[in-house]
Each structure stands twice: as C-alpha cells, then as structure tokens.
Amino acid sequence: MKTEKEKMLDGEIYNANYDEFLIKERTKAKDLCFEYNKLKPSNESERKRILKEILGKTKENFLIEQPFICDYGYNIEIGENFYSNHNLVILDANKVKFGNNVFIGPNCGFYTAGHPLDVKMRNQGLEYAKSIEIGNNVWFGGNVIVLPGVKIGNNCVIGAGSVVTKDIPDNVLAFGNPCKIYKNIENN
Image (cartoon, rainbow, N blue to C red; front, side):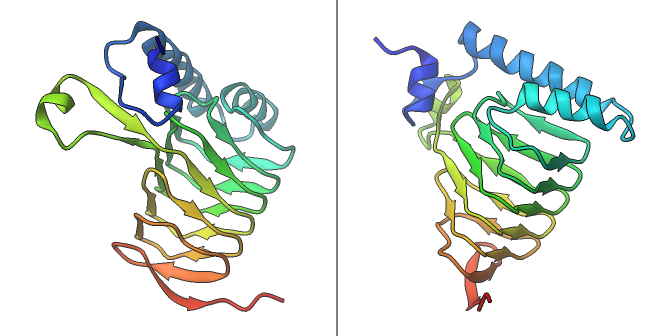
C-alpha cells in the first residue's frame, strides 16, 4: 500500500490534512521559510545557506527576495541565474522545476496542488498534485499564477497578471486570464 507521500508525488488523490508525516514535513519547511524571511537582506550568506537547506536542488547563482513561502521545499529545483522578486509562493506538493535564467516578478505563485470537484472528497481533506516545469530563459511579470500540471517552454515571457492554466510552447509572449499566446518571439 502506498504512503500518502507516494500518492502525492505520483499525482494521485492523497490525504494532505491528516497525514502526520506530511504535516511534519510541511512544518519543517515552513519553519525554515520563517527563519529565512526574518533575516536581514544584507545577510546574504545565511540567506543562501537556508535556501539551500529548503530547496531540493539549486545551482550556485540564485536569489529569492523575501518573503518566500513553500510547502515542502524538497520538490523545488532551480537552475543557474534564478531570480525571484518578493512574495514568491510555491505550493510544491509535486515537483516544480525551473530552468536556467528564470526571472520572476513580485507576487507570483506556482501551485501544484488541486482539490477534487466532489465536495465530499474535498471536505475529507483530499487533494492531488501535478508537477510544474519551467524552461530556460523565462520571464514572469508580476502577479502571475501557474496552475498544476503546466509546462512552460524555453525563451518565453509570461505577462503580468496572467493565470497559466495550460502548457505554453517555446519562444512566445503569452498573457491573460486564462493565459494565451500573443505572439512568437524571435531570439538571436
């Protein structure tokens, strides 16, 4: 029989609210986020150390402005030259992978978690989680939300205020709610 964590990582319905192991893991990540968020911005070495403890995989050059909040942390992978402005929220019940040279505006969210439409299941604390994957050289304007299961290709710009509900291919400018492709971007 699968654990709730195994179900979570496999994208199946799982019990997020009453599984003691998952609650313990979330509490650990949230305590680390709290510690990170109260640090002075000038304390760069300690900020980097805590982020490396929170996140599943990092490269060497990255910065996440405070505050930052995540659920588990170990499901998050960031590439080289990763930058996020203030108020990044990553609900990482499943994998969230960012490529190299990703720039994220303020108040953005990446949400792998979703809940059943069936009210009885939802009221039991059940949910599912689908991975999110972001390519290289992607820029997100402020207040962008990326929903469960979305893949965004390389060299994209996602305009401010967008809600990304479906995959976005390489080399496009996309924006809106729901986010739609506006035009192709020619990269040299």
